[in-house]
Image (cartoon, rainbow, N blue to C red):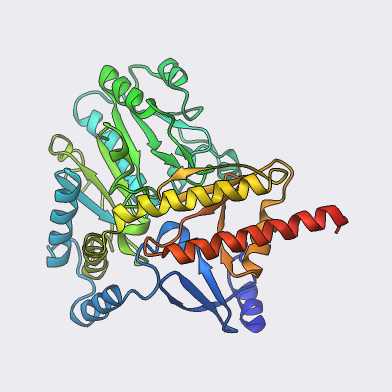
Length: 405
């Protein structure tokens, strides 16, 4: 394994900070490294592997579709993509879908759609977006600018014109920022990368009302919260709110790259022929994979189970936080998107590494949040084991602090 780590460090661009682990196999909620060590995967590729690793139905679909047809251009229809569009629209109540390859691409399409909608309506002055501090919407030049983390924008030239950031959850700040030039409010129903912070009660409803009052679009980034992650097909379904446009990716392909935006009929003409595209978007292979994900979610009741399992995980993380009050601040999240937030001064990255050494894979969100985004197929027993390993990790951190190690 060490040789592969060295090769990776030599030949891969160093824009990631990879741990010195090389994974070679996965099954369900378990991953195995080159040396055969087993890990409970509570990262799932950052909320991507909704069906876990090597789900037999998804494996079979990808193999069979690859043998049949992988790609044709968007100058033609393909069967799998047409059927996927219908299934997504029927499940969500939207009327039209556009497909691409990632969440960043989906959010880019949503930005373009909003601006062009008002331009075509004879209101080109409506081009400004309101977005939120600590938000994350992708890594393209436009999406890092709509995101609310200043460090991600450093060194990339002038900021994108027409974006106003306000504190997440502060409805009065949004109200003050509104104006006749605003075309849309861009928001996550739960801030994922920003620390797994759910929208405060009434916040999304207030944004909906402000958009209606000021003729602006409510643009919901459901890249991390969508496809059952929160215990509903879409995160917005925990409220009475309906976004004008919704972006999806991550869990939609179960590990195969695909992104999408969903729109109602009244916005269907906002991106007419020639205004936007994606070479690989909606290809038969990605579409077949996504259709299988949607089918398995239904057949195995994974969306409903995400709510139950999320409540179980939440209660166990709260118990861990209570056992380690010197290290842990609080637990929060929704469904199977959760975080245990460490106290200021606790080195989250060091805790992450120690958890990995004990066979538990997590990610960091918001600097201090140990984020859990396990596969939706994770079992109750695996949740128990994951939390036990986290508890052991925090005990070891405390012992070191006491001993001065």
